[in-house]
Image (cartoon, rainbow, N blue to C red; front, side):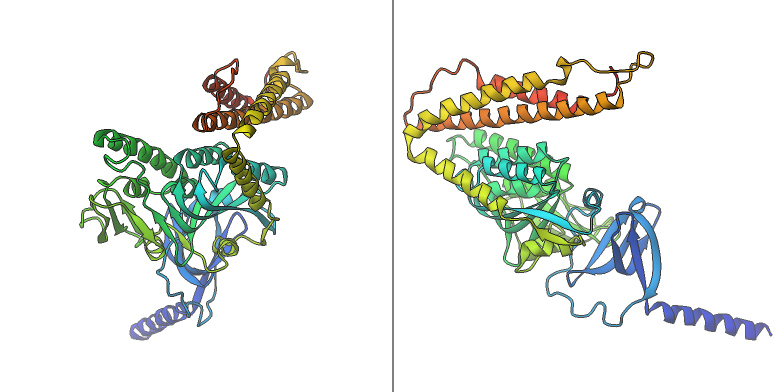
Length: 462
């Protein structure tokens, strides 16, 4: 009798094991997305599922708080067949990206494409990006796709674009689609929430000061490169990319190592990893070279996700965003207009003299409106016992705060434009006019006022 029961239990156990081979797991997230595949990790902190995205087999990892439930269903026999010939990779920035993407709760996901083609400072200009984002904000488009194909260029343009993106980070989710992102391009790439790369794409090679050939002083060049690398590394850290990656792309002396963690995922580090705590350790970049990643390498090391020929259109499928659709061509138009404006400035010194009075008028007009719209200038209804503003007063306060912030933002943009025009005028021999104020002081005030307005926007007390 005991032998019969033991055989029965063994048979049942074997049946369960065999049946599990044809079963699948369906992972449902709280933001409405679902993924079919096989759960490969389920612990108190996170859940990982082996699945397919856009025909590419990959492993997605989500924190427990993002997961609604897991169901078991039949997995098609050929589910994992016909895998892509590109290396298996993780979606870029997978640890924090879903939390930002899940803000979009609609069945349709519109996006604005902004092309970054050509040279920074000539073809790619901050004014074009700012205008494109203004359009996206008016149309309530949350997703911005930067299609990058650039050999680099002027660092000032790349830094200003990165700053514009940072200042509007709470409005948008940024996606980078890389065809070629060299030198100054990495400021924009690493300012994005996720990175996607085309089959022939490359990222890196961002040494700005070339050891004795730029400033004439090796020590000075090293310090300048180090300061710029620290700035880009800070962007990486804020966006969830590996900071050591930026340093390897900018500093000849920086090293980069790759290894697999305890979950089998490829990770990067700026220091050599002990073999006792990691596997598949390899040197990606030595202390004598500047890092440039090919598409295959970016995928292998988990820096980017793969996209095909229809690169921008593939982003939605890669991130499992429903109804991914492009809204118009305003991004292209904004960048083209900014380039045309810049070429006009470069081509005719007379136009510089005309531009300065216009910019001064715009600065003064918007500054006056910002000061007039400041919510602190007005009185509001409130409860005398609690000192809490009425609902109507709170709405008016937020509206005036947003309007005031918008005007200060315009002052800042026009002041930066004036600064560039004056610098350009100096290069072509135009005598600078008397402004009556210091541009640097004005920019400092713009930042101070916008920071104040942002902090006090949701004020409820008198």
